[in-house]
Picture 1 (spheres, rainbow, N blue to C red):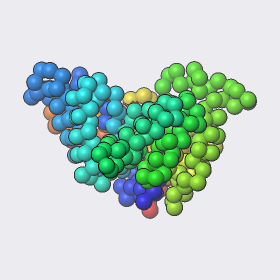
Picture 2: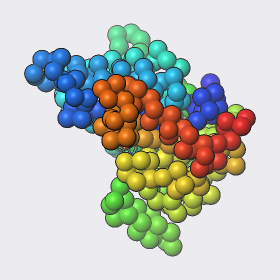
Picture 3: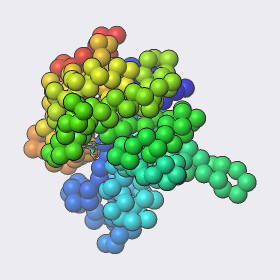
Picture 4: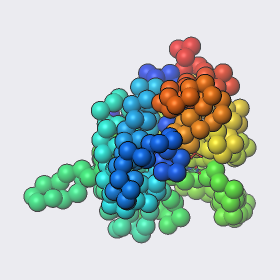
Length: 312
Ligand SMILES: O=C(O)c1cc(=O)[nH]c(=O)n1[C@@H]1O[C@H](COP(=O)(O)O)[C@@H](O)[C@H]1O
């Protein structure tokens, strides 16, 4: 089944549009968690593996999508990447879609290697086999069309998805993305190109394999892009810790409560450190994580069109 159709069906089946972000920072692991592991780089990577898998066990039954932020695993070198691989494999045991967030890209030929690595297959001996085999990945559009085409080609062949950074959530997002050129800010030029890049790749549910990343922290731009990009899935990070609210995200959905996937990473992964959850659940950190997901589901249901997913 096409990636975008799998997203629509998964969101419908779970009744919410949540992307649970797993961005593990060793210094924020539950108190005492690291004590059970050797005091070296491999030990920390093993702790990230154990922690990430435990988070997956809590979030995968509730959320339709999990997003892994590669940076926090890469930080621990090859051992960290092995931990990421094992945690992705653990997530694969559940009925959940997996996004690899590495914001990759390069010139066309190198972009093709990235696309093969994460979405496609690589030659091994006389045959081809998948390497990372995730459902979708994030990419950077700065290099233009030839850097995007290989991702679209391979995603299309493998029924995978790609999310292009269009208007990011960070404070300096506007440095380049808001520069006006030919009467439009650069991020809207990217959005217009994205429509072309995705042409011919629409799934049966009306959404494209090529999605757009749009931050929750810029509600006006989000509303603009929802209008500019019908049929494009929006991956919306920035909810919670970065200050994005459900009200701000509401404009990202279509009239059926579909079309936007809302990510929260620290707000879920490290929920147990928040005073309200810490006092309520004491040392039971997985219960705090579960409650954070349930609270986010309720918040989006009450304050965005995603509530329509529940009413059927
Ligand atoms: O592509 C992304 O996912 C992304 C794009 C963006 O504009 N802003 C953004 O925060 N992200 C990622 O989304 C996650 C947000 O994490 P929290 O702020 O902890 O919820 C991190 O993994 C970021 O790298």
